[in-house]
Image 1 (tube, rainbow, N blue to C red):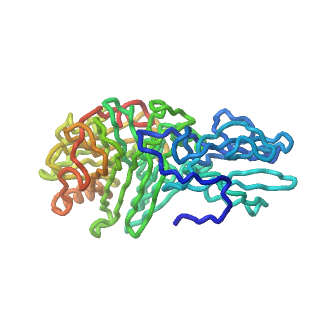
Image 2 (cartoon, one colour; image 1 turned 90 degrees about the vertical axis):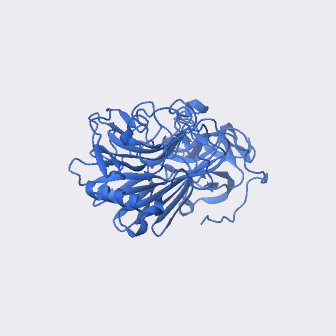
Length: 477
């Protein structure tokens, strides 16, 4: 539940509605710095800042003015040797030192207040508190709320939310769009987290060029720990995350994978103005290793091109046996030798990866650990298998990885505004366990899904082919 604040507001609310829908919003990545010699906290949006020590990220706010926002300014007092954040260009003897961007006037989903605190005495200081921070025990007094922003998480790459089933634990990363950063079974965590293009998540393209217009659930290519430090990483904002029993539900605002294509850069994430939702149910139909996974896109405007990885799983590189499974024929085909290193094999090129009923499995060489994805669909039931083995390790945070994807590529171009859902069934266990589970899915008529769920049009286009993975090289989804 959102916390209630009974405090003074530092400005008169504008009572404006949310900004009109457009394709993307360029954000400012607001960081907080500390100068011990001056006992001075300050906010910055400049990666080259040298006035103190970087404590971490605080908020995302809009880079430019839009309806429902108010500009924030950094002020400085030479007399007090102190910085202060304000909605005014001068206040109480403090002079303008620069603009920080535009905070939201009212709290939208997932936003938190940007509260200004003040400390008198020898350690005279103004401070804008970060998410969940309460500086009152240190002698600070709350002055009021400057506005609202999407909270960031200081020096952290990960903030975990767990979903526990009878045998499986899933971990969602609150810092990175609530993408699934962990799937643990029988003592082994299977998911790779080199950067924010890995995990188990969803991503899609709106053009024929891979990664050109590419909202990604976890965040942008500036992900940690493998590309940048947590202090500078760009994870997608989360609007909602909840665990109830064996079900996890999330809603996030995905960032563009390449912010430079949309007016951003390493200091300015670009947020797509639609949303991604997912519902994950562990212990599906009472089975401890079965997972029902539904991904929903909330698309604000019609788009002429669309290519979707409904679910993609980047796993640790020791799951290096790549299989295609045809449930109708009950055949398991090892495609490990046929998948090009630093590349992919997909259903448009290999009929083994386009069964009417079936899917893909990644497994360890001894078959003791495996994760599979199943779907039944009468047309264009396409999957992909990928591998990236370059001697960079088999660990959770190493660069090497293997991957499967469930693709939505029905032949009618584009996607309409509205809500569009796709459901996939996952199985974890030994290789023989997963094969048996996927055959059981095939025999269960309750999970038949020919196309898309309610609210969809089934209108997708085949666009750019899969290439190299995010965080390894350009190309792909």
